[in-house]
Amino acid sequence: MESSGSSSDHIPTDKQYPKLSKATSGYLEIDYFQNADLHTGYFCYNCTYFIKEGNHCAIVEDSGPDVREQESGIIAPHGICTLWDPNEMETR
Image (cartoon, rainbow, N blue to C red; front, side):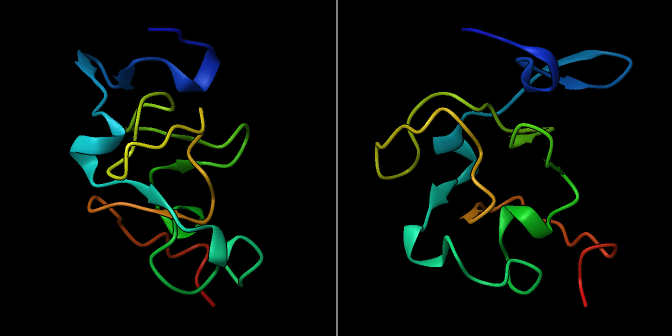
């Protein structure tokens, strides 16, 4: 498993917890919403775990297949998963 910067394979805490796979987290990218207003809805862009610099997630791995067995190598801003938590700084 590759790791680089913010996309390391461990959740950033005082202990080393492995990140969840995309499939385990229920992650999928919905290309239809790629150009949507991502400040509304349950998109990764609007989640507390989303790291905008480089399109990463603090708790889900970048690589690996999603629930539809597709692989993009990033956590897309227009993606969604079951772990979504609202980022109050992003909502309007």
